[in-house]
Length: 76
Image (cartoon, rainbow, N blue to C red; front, top):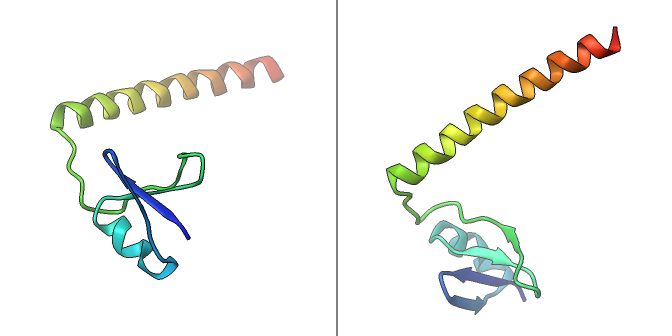
């Protein structure tokens, strides 16, 4: 039986009800507590946290582009 977690609440649910719990904001976890499937709904993220994540994504994209460019130069 799969387990789902939201905040500090862990529930054991039937296989057929997992999608419903994911929609409600629960993450599906394994026996060790590691997230197997992330929630598909039922959550809100503060704008400051969203902006921080978007800034980090942009920084990593730029870093990746520079790394690819350097690799191309090194391969020639």
